[in-house]
Structures are given as C-alpha cells and as structure tokens.
Image (tube, rainbow, N blue to C red; front, side, top):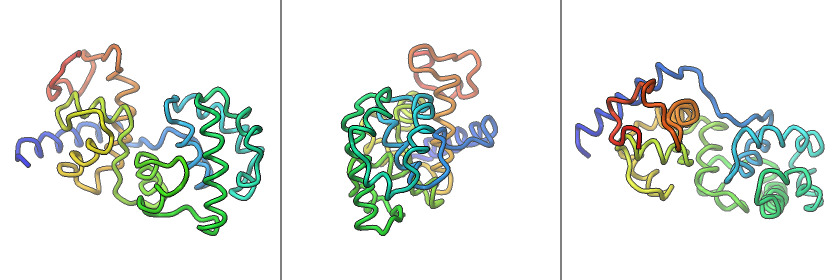
Length: 211
C-alpha cells in the first residue's frame, strides 16, 4: 500500500473527526436486538424512515422471544413503509427464532456467526460487532461506498470489495467511527445527486469534485 494513500486516509480521518466529533449510529434503539432488527429494516430504506417505523414495532414486540413468536403478517403491517417488507418481516421473525433457539437470546459478537442469521449480511454484522461490542468494523453502506470512491480510498460498488480495500488503509481503531462520520457527511454535505462541494471540508482531497 502506498504511503501517499495511507497519508490521505489519515488526513480524511482527522478532518472528519474534527467535523463530526460526537456522531453515532443513526438508527434508534434501546436493546441489542433492536439494533439488529433496525439494521435489517434499513436495507434499501432510509434511516429516517426506519426510525419512524421502529417505535411502534418495538412497543408491540419487546423481546427476542416475542419477535420469535410473532405472526409474520402482523410484522409486515407494522413495517410496510420500509419497502421489501414481506422479506424483511420473514427475516426478522426467523432471525429471532434462531437467536432464541441457537444463541440463547444473545446477539453473536463475531461477523462469522452473525452472517449465519437469516437476512444478515456483512454490513449489518459489522455494525453489530462495532456498535454493540466495540470491535473494529467497516460498515460499508451506500454512503461509505460512494464517498470512499469519490475520495479515492476505494474503487467499485461491491460492499465486500470496498471493505477489503479500506481494511488495508484504515487503522482498525478508527474504522467504525470513520464509517459513521462518512454516513453523516454523505447526508449533510456530499449528497449523491448534488454534492455541496462549496462547503465540503474534504474538497481538496476529493478526486471527483462535484461528480
């Protein structure tokens, strides 16, 4: 890995840390399993929409056991506005059943175990091990993929390939917070359709400037 790219990554980390010192996961939750479910709901759906839907969902189903026993059609109705609701509802109930029956109602703390759960991919698994267990994690959602491509830290749209590229240049202890900060920067400044380059603190490091 080139020293120039490593130095660029460090500059981006430092700038974003100063710009967004106290960011956290944008999904609202109070229990570990709620973050897992909210993250599943966030696939092809905005975090804002998920946060509108989950209060009623978590009020009705308060535990892994209750989700495991839930009627899938009822869960469908509660999450209908999140999109792909039939698949998501099925996954939520099935993952809850696996958590109850295989993991004794505990959320696994490794990516390898988490991706065994129905509907859980590497993005969700990384978020869980990072936010719940404080482990190094690269959560490569659409914002992270878009921004790291624009900044020249990664190439391509495949989440796993971007994760592998970033793992070579991002210190493990910086990985989770960098992803959270990239998400916030992507929402507030570096919009997909119309990036606000005139107020972007990363403009001098960007390779696509406005594109």
